[in-house]
Image 1: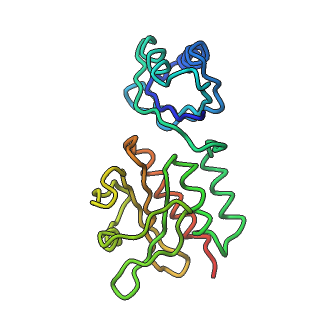
Image 2: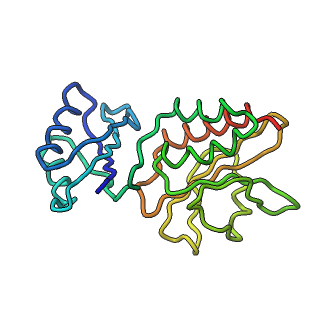
Image 3: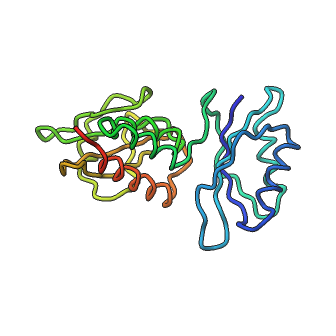
Length: 214
């Protein structure tokens, strides 16, 4: 079974190797590791995509991590079968290679790039939120969606009753014609969105809007 593990650890040589060794000894087969954030206090946050045999419980990985000095587990959860961690550059190449569908491609690459469960792009039409594009698992719009159109920067969004277990974040951008659109993403249960993730999301949405051609 595939799992996604988010950990915080000292940002010093050898820490990542020690983590990989501990996870391997606990029975995990590591598929990919990506650095999510370097922090000013000398720590880093990493995402680890791994496979775990059915006989091994995820709690075993948490125990293995906590046995290492300075390592803290932020989150562990099942991950979509066959999914991979995508890097920002790979995502950007996806939508810049097809400018006529840049925002559509952006919505499709955001979930694997930011480890969200879904993404959607919205635009205001006659005062109401209208979906431009959404990933296959994105839910139906709720009335609260109209309030998202007023955001001016990348930030976390208030939860809504219909998705009370989902953490939401959004960002605003413009296409080449100056038309505003908003990208909203959701994570079921967590982990919380980091400041670096929100900044990356905003930058990526701006790039997609800048290359979008009609």
